[in-house]
Amino acid sequence: MANGFGSDEPKATTPAEALLERRAAALDAAFGKADVPARLAGIVAQAAGPVVFTTSFGLEDQVLTHVIGTAKLPVTFATLDTGRLFPEVYALWQETEERYGIVIRPYYPRHDAVELHVRQNGINGFYASRDARKSCCDIRKVEPLGRALAGADIWLTGLRADQSAARGGVKLAEADAARGLVKASPLIDWTRERALAFAEENAVPLNPLHARGFVSIGCQPCTRAILPGEPERAGRWWWEDDAAKECGLHVGQDGNLARVKPASVEARA
Ligand code: SF4
Image (cartoon, rainbow, N blue to C red; front, side, top):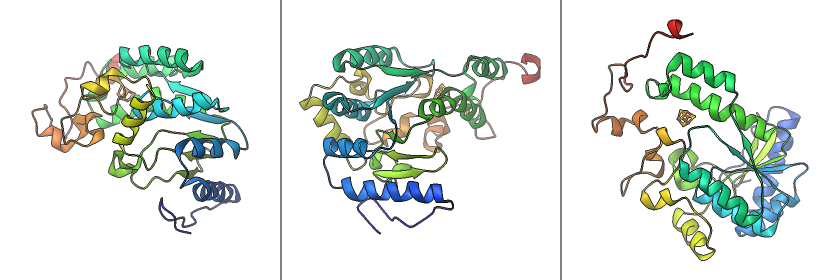
């Protein structure tokens, strides 16, 4: 069945996956045309287990936090503290908890994995290669996310379809077979302007970095402000972007930002 968020072509290969896909399609059909408060309330009401909302305190996440917190929906708030966040994020984290009377559960990377990664790659080793960057993200984000979502039935995210081409195909609700849950993105069809207007109308606390050109805010060393007209996510891992590489970054023959290896991995291990 086609709907406003794309095709619902069956992809499931197991009964469990088929069930997740049917549930996601049903949420999509039931709440695709609803407003965001009704979407959230409806999705939460349909949950068969815990609903977890992962926030990184960006504009969209703050809008969802406002709606969930104001309606006092039974949702668990979670965030991934990578250890490399901007100071502004920590200030906003506390302000948000106080404003809405909520607790946002922190998930930290495994200290032994971070210690080994830094020993082998250097404290900023993620600039040296895509593999090192992905390894850092795996340790600081992906593994903790798995723990944050363990046992969840529905995962709420602040994704918008127009944030990037890669996100363009995301639907309101999707089956996440790997995690065994339904992933729902209630702002999927909102524009950034709409989210900004909502935040302003409702005095939603926002990261002050947004006003300084930081549109998509992740870890401090991997986020930069963007210029007018640049794609929203151009400020994330910009050194891996061909356009940015042409603007003066020191790129090695392998296509990666040239860095002097702090020492051989073997010597540091
Ligand atoms: S965004 Fe950068 S610092 Fe953060 S986990 Fe990924 S590579 Fe590491």
